[in-house]
Length: 83
Image 1: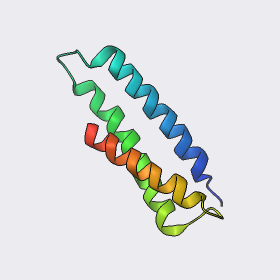
Image 2: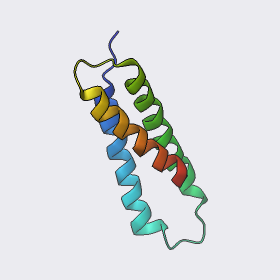
Image 3: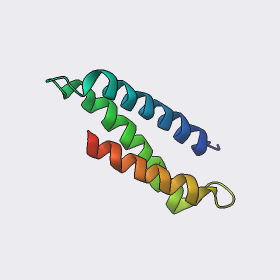
């Protein structure tokens, strides 16, 4: 069975960027920052896991593995650190 990693990573990136926009709009001035931790953590974990898997196993033909895999790893690290 083939799992389309690029679609999963792009959907995850869109969800993370919407979460970040909502955080900047509503949550950055809030005194209670705890509700944002699971969203940033889950989004970052998915991005980090799929990015590392794509970087090490090369499931897609061509250089898309490097472009999408390493970018997803960076995105995942940033969001896990934000969590």
